[in-house]
Length: 315
Image 1 (cartoon, helix red, strand yellow):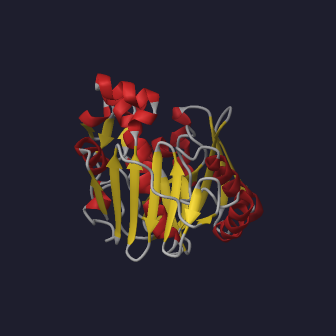
Image 2 (image 1 turned 90 degrees about the vertical axis):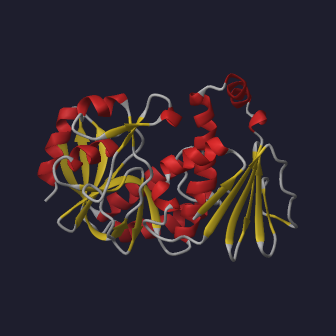
């Protein structure tokens, strides 16, 4: 995969977050993202398929200020024209030069122009993408699913100190019941640093006061591996783990996916936002029923100490 931009700061940010892909350490991806700062929108194409998207025989254009995206196939090229001055807080940030605000729109562009092309690439190859984290041990993968702030990443990092290897942190790539390694730069909050001091950290100057977890072959699994169990995480009044049937599991997978659709700037799990939600729901539910044949559990916990109880369920 290749990312091209006229903004050196953005390229540095991409390298620090998606270094495994850019170095072709996981898979060589025939895909190019070109991102131009301060450019105009692309011209609309002949066929209108939504209020923001137009289509021609060999390209698609999606205009949504301040970002305009054009997608061309064979080879797959994503081109973006981005005007940061159209976002007021970004314009002020550029004037002040503050790192935090600058990273806000770097993250915005990474999600639109690095993550989405990757998702689009994999979806065309038959993979499912889930907002989740996963760990591996002895040839078995355990998947943690749930909404934001449910402890998926923290649980995975905790288990990595107990002999488990991380396979994914924020999004998980699944095909035929197997998890395929997907890893961005795993960043740690102050909470993680305080509660998991055994982890190795490095400073991220480009990302303010946050830190990045140091991962290598010892604590990251690079081999596609079968899923053993699914865990749907939620906050409760104590620790509880209850088995659920496949229909319940499929419905919860769909619920998480639909919740993600409400926040396309954050965890949107498909590239094409102009496909109607009904069509997305129907196609996804069928796929989710296949995945839900794997043993699934509702997992409740109330505090960080309860996370230690999870290890008993990983058998």
